[in-house]
Each structure stands twice: as C-alpha cells, then as structure tokens.
Image (cartoon, rainbow, N blue to C red; front, side, top):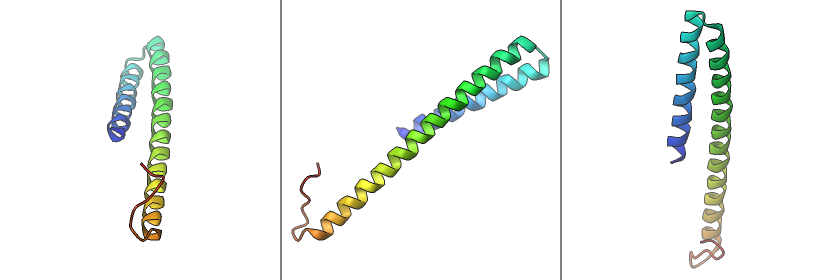
Length: 83
C-alpha cells in the first residue's frame, strides 16, 4: 500500500510537469502560472509522501531488529511485550 501511494504521487508530479511543459510551449502565461503552482504543490506533496514512506520503513526495520534480538535472548523463543 505504501509503495502504491508513493508511485501514485510520483505519477501526479510527472503529469503536472507535462501539463506545465505544454503550457510553456503554448506560451499561455496565465496557464503557465497556474500549472507551475500546481506542479510545485504536487512536488511538495510527493516529498511528504516519500518522507513518510522512509520513516515508516525505518520504524518497521527497527521493530524487526528488536524482535529478532528479543527472540535470540529468550530461551523459549517467545517474545513478551510484542503483539
């Protein structure tokens, strides 16, 4: 799910960039301004998605390492406090 969200955000940025490039080729100043703003908003949103994605991946990895460490420390292999 996280990967799909990131990929969708990337697609939106790519689309906004194409629309901006079209407006620039056509020389429509008003449309360029609107598209440039939308492109910047899409990029900012994409950055937020990527930062959240990275944060969650790090937290999942940390939890995984803790679980593995706890499993190695427990003689019966059961880890208390983790659900």
